[in-house]
Image (tube, rainbow, N blue to C red; front, side, top):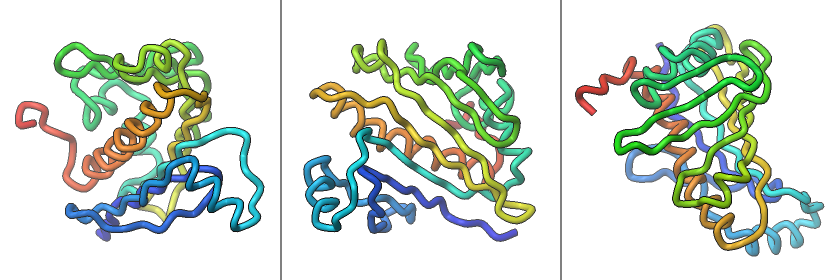
Length: 197
């Protein structure tokens, strides 16, 4: 079976950003500040979007049905995100990870299209109380790539202006990149053994 390393893409103001390999062999996007992205966009004469987006994509060596199950069932989410994750697959249902130490992540399911799309109202980490209370929207899209691979694209929107929002964006750029990397690892190495983690 052919395993692809995850490709992590980061988009601000609709730009394609060059990828550089890090020490672990994962492609990561070169960080751009909103100001540098704006000036780059202006120099390219590209129209600026009115809303900032965080976009990350990974290709995993599994069928779309397998990846969908890993996202939309409690048992599946617990194989890669955190033990004891909860998924109630319905509009208004819970998509929650309970991490060691008592913190929670995830959010509330807004909508879904089976094996194609899952949209949640996302909880930011507790260290960003305004962002956590206001929430952002995260859309996961699932696209088959042949019979044995699936592209999973995360698009996070609803970002506001301000220091806390900028810090949360930076934090979640790294955090969501790690999330997608862990998803890839789950399908390369099998379900995570939480007793060994």
